[in-house]
Image (cartoon, rainbow, N blue to C red):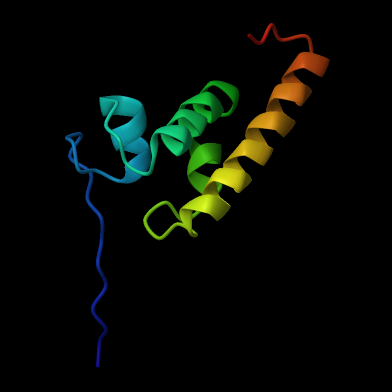
Length: 88
């Protein structure tokens, strides 16, 4: 017997997966702090790398997600500065 598999289809509208809602539509998805961390990360890495950082449709508890994303922002910001990027 075949199994049922849910496929997420993006249509470019609000209600797409979280990264699209946050980055393309400016819509709130998780919390103001987490959404801002996602926007910061999007300035530091290509979107495909951001998409690989976690299972955005089934994220960890928000406190864990916030800590994980903050760690990545800090690490990537420091790496960018070492490479000569001007980061504000």
